[in-house]
Length: 49
Picture: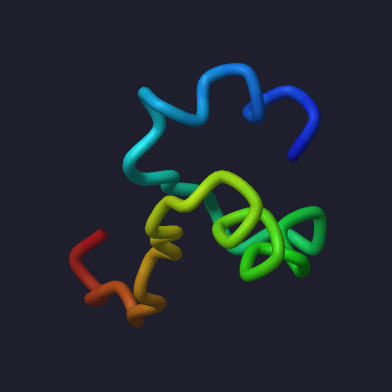
């Protein structure tokens, strides 16, 4: 992922992903391209959904 984002380092300000295992190294990616990395907050869905 870092190699793919590196050419766009000037344009990438934030990265948002899901909670999958493939993003376990999100801190290293964020540091490499100097961007903020956001992960979604987990919540329990109500019974109506």
